[in-house]
Length: 291
Ligand code: AMP
Ligand code: MN
Ligand code: MN
Ligand code: MN
Image 1: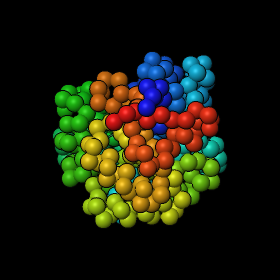
Image 2: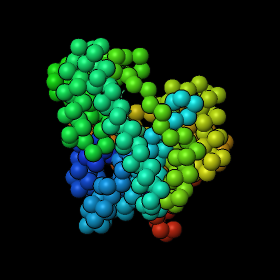
Image 3: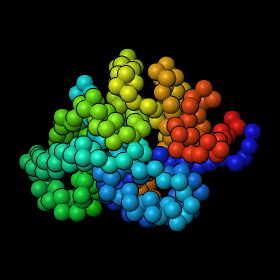
Image 4: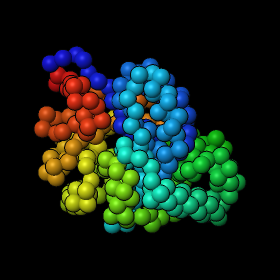
């Protein structure tokens, strides 16, 4: 066992979607935390990747351009990350379509909150639309908190935005198949994001993972902050059963949120191929911390 553990983070957000740090601030923070391999995976845009790549080069961090796409599977929203590769017209069109659906959804949520929840929903939604290139529910939750209508983001979701609440607007995102096809066209390595967070039965999650693998997916996120050891085991078993690699990242959005700091020590079971190794020169073998 060695103490030379490479810190990696293959799932982060910047101000180009719903993160609060711009790409350069994100990279500076990652450098300060000793991250050696970093991906920027904003929702539905790669606009921050150029600035992040340049900042990583000056900090000696290996950079992987990424994107996190919303998709629908059996009526449930799931997130798929594409890493590496290159932008192409198909990906740009796909992202533009997702952003258009997001804008329409935020307006509908605002109107519903105005009608049903006695919030100034239209004004809040308008403020989000004016400031966010990729308007997400996270932005709206922040506006709800800033307006004094909820004490924090998670309660803004619980009270107003979650399924069953006044501001819930179901969205039909592109299918899993269409999403993977777009990511294949841009030659990206494809990761199913945070599989443990979906509200699916064990059988449905197995079906999702198996379909993801059949469609050409490469890896599952098997290690995120806040994941219980039981979930790490469960998702790790699913990865092995479908011969998928394991990815690790923080899903970092905001330095004020303490539970998902940037940078992760890789803690994958030895049977799981670490996806990060595919983005490193062969010589720099990843090291796994002692149990
Ligand atoms: P969406 O617009 O549905 O893609 O949601 C945007 C973002 O909101 C997600 O990427 C998360 O960052 C955040 N989010 C979703 N649900 C919650 C929640 N229950 N509490 C806090 N943040 C959330
Ligand atoms: Mn987000
Ligand atoms: Mn996500
Ligand atoms: Mn994310």
